[in-house]
Length: 254
Image 1: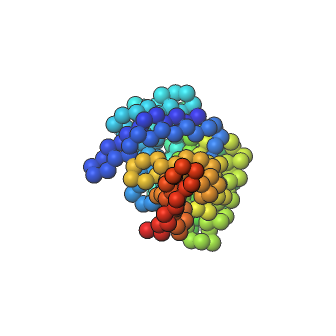
Image 2: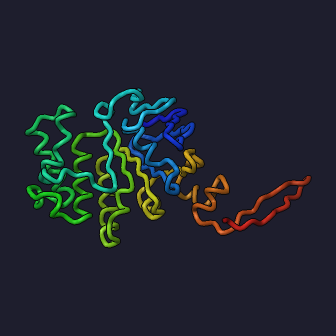
């Protein structure tokens, strides 16, 4: 589904370096890592908002490296909703359909269906400023799905929500993924998001992808000292081997 090959994105003072990643069709993949590690930059590169300096990106077998955002069949949802305050909820959801050759009548019907699916149909004619944070985020997700994306990118979609709303939206994302079979790539800082939603995950650090595997593999068998520290291991043992014996040096994670 998604093939990222040797991708490098150079920005002033920062660089995403030599990322190679393959995400299967219908997979829910999460990117985790500290703030400033390059997760959002990689998402924006996939969406076509930030160009790659080198490397290739293929989505469903099609090379999209040089294509503009509206030609990639990709939808991106940010944590801050990014809704148009002067449009109604329904108008927000249907807004991007015009760029995907979806006729107005079909698009409006599908927008209503998505709002109903996400428990928002009663708010269809309200403005976003009248909604709660959780409702706004569900509108953002409905707007992304209304454009028939092949890939849904989520940038910290739950981080700005109050705790009482997180669990509900997390379950809605899980149900949407199960029902639609859509390929999803989500950036998150929350380990619970990764455990609850993801099939596999990748850990980024200083612009590099340090480890890729199932969520259990990453937390139980970290591949590097940084990953071990990031997932919460308190101590790291460095080993040297002499003949048939291993000698361990204990080092606390900093």
